[in-house]
Image (tube, rainbow, N blue to C red; front, side, top):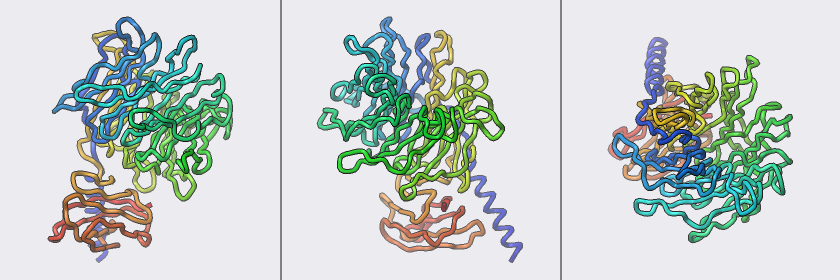
Length: 493
């Protein structure tokens, strides 16, 4: 019996290694067209990984350094620009500084935080565009900031694009601590939702980063200069929409120590329950200022760290300057744009039930690789920008590289053609939904192959898993004929 157990364990661990191993393959590269375009400074990709918006805030159009954005769609093995360039108006607008895209890739938000209005400077604007036929048309008027507000430092659309949150991290005037606002689409007019959310103190640069859940009812705002846990330690705040206003959920999520700049970059899973935060100047366990990232889950009314800190390795690589999380919350993409004399790099991480473990290959490049990055819903396609990369067209043209993963880890929410199983990792329950298959049962086994849970059902179901202890498991789902139609790995937290 003991020999059998050892054999099962050996085979099972081998299966885990096969299931969880993958590597990313570069599919395509999009180069800047002219010197100093710096494309890839900001990126956003649709949930299906087929539509990409690229910001180039330093691009010159018609001799004016106004910035631009371009939208690309995957076509076979190529990525083709879809529609004309979306262009800023004035000199040094910084149009394309921040970009976002709806889940289905039909709506895009683009900001120009240095946009001037009349005699005022750096008011900032956000513009929203819809895909109409084969072109992109602005929906509603510009959302404008006040003098020196810097509106649009950050921007994020919710899943269907009906709401947009944006940060204004200006350090003068009424919004000296920074602020964030949310607007919704009301028949083509952008209408403010709730009150303005202001930073805690002057100089916090609250609004440097923002994120929003897919349903648009939870937002996150970063303030990397906040001093709640030391000078410029930084913090992040989360807010839920309740009775038409934004109410903070949980306590401030503070940086670890002074000068961490925690909250300079944030990203959230689609359900709004998992948050990743970068702190690009954190000191690692070896005493090196390399940066780190932390992941938090909302449990009850508290934000609880999931896994250990994810640390940078080298002095001033600024690990955590940019962070991304897959829509299902199971895969991270974290950049160090100043690694190796500003060549830059990005790493992929997955949760193993205890910690976040690097998987796949490190994405290396040149020209501050990782300043812009994003990933699709399940993390199967990655977009990584290197805005200061040079080419035959000149210096700092920039480049955006698209990567596909050659083998997805089995630790994922299964949301392929027919199935949706979530959450994974799970705690108290698992939900199973099928679009086409008639299902009959779920079986969960431990690493020794022993059954720990079996339940029969014939329709979408919510399964109680309170009696399943923490650990790594395998599951099988059978159809009405008793045939296994899906299997994979689950993690109980």
